[in-house]
View 1: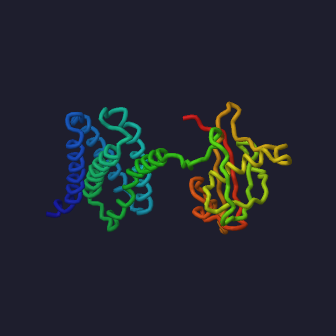
View 2: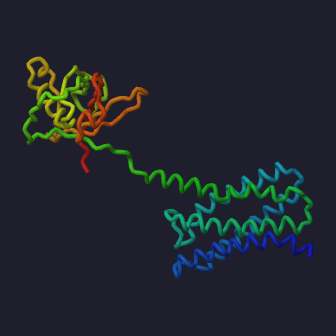
View 3: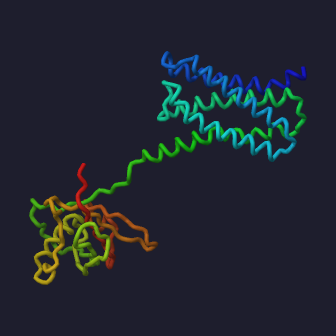
Length: 282
């Protein structure tokens, strides 16, 4: 009976590992090579069994924990390296493959560790506390998958405004006007220094129309036209503009050029910044 209680935790871990293998077999079907996967399970069982034997020879909890933690992490790295080389159905792009297969190997390995450790009659009241270092086997997979998912996050791209070269300059009606400071970059690709001056525009007109008028007015003014605002690239393509302002906490707030000043929550004496960039070809 004593022997049964010693191997019971190992049997439970082994059954858990085989359960995850069953999930893999169900999902992969005939594409999964049972023989190759069985070899993986056996090798993992043996490696963890050897690790259990090594730890059974030390009375130091700290040393045993460090050994189990380090070796589990190393085997987790080997799993990620060798799996795509030996398992044709395994893909590191699949969360199912990486984690379900990893959990299957992990529990089978823990079964090997517990059997060896317990059968050597190693009386250690903290033997199961040592197992807290074993999940390090899955840590490389977690790091790898997290990095892959992070790399797949699309780059943040704001909606930009381009000068409507084929549209007439809008006529502004001075109703409900708002006085703002309009700062801009005269040439693309330079975030600073900004140039600009104070203007007064109707607050119920879209920001895109206002900026269209602003560029046209600036480039025709006898004083300002000496340094015109460039709105076409060297290839005669419309530049892309992003307009923004800062909150009182100095947080950048991107303005929607299809909304009015009021809808963009632009108030009197606010400073609007306009940055131009060369068009991005898709």
